[in-house]
Amino acid sequence: MSPRAGLTPDAVVTLALEVVDADGAEALSLAKVAERAGVATPSLYKHVGGLAALRRLIDLRVAAEMTEALRGAATGRSGDDAIEALADAYRAYLRAHPHRVAALETAPDEGDEELAKATHGVAEVAFAVLRPYGFNQAKTVHATRCLRAAVHGFASLEASGGFGRPEDVDASFTLLKTMLVRGIADYTS
Image (cartoon, rainbow, N blue to C red):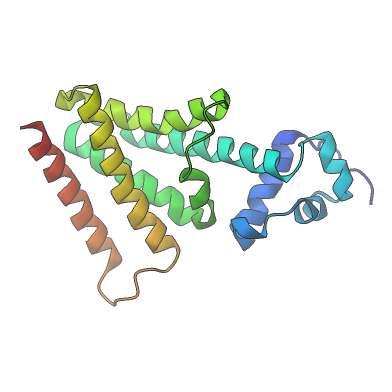
């Protein structure tokens, strides 16, 4: 194998995400990434420090992509419309990349400031959407957790084929958004 021109840590992450998207997160290995890159597996160590380091870089990328998707959806919207747009964007991301769900489920190690900042970016978008409701800090955190748990749980179940009943899944998601909006409205009182 000859070295692939332009191989960088960012390119390795892109190739790794191709593996994850195609085969699932559990199938990720340095050998599969190296095969996609057209290099020998040891060549990847010039760009990433091993499989754990690669998984961390994937988590960074996914958090950044999700933050941008949510920010783009919420921009120019407010109130109930912003909450629904946030939910739609979260679901759309996981529909497009169902095997990336694990990258959004685990809080980073306390010592990993870069990953903590990236994952907090997702929460910060939700905080901004909820700010007009006038919650204090604690209530904002609670509402954000509930919003995330509901939408992430729904999207995760959908991505894994967890909704086997014949009723329309989109109708269920619309109901979920209505319940979230009403719940947040009730939470303000």
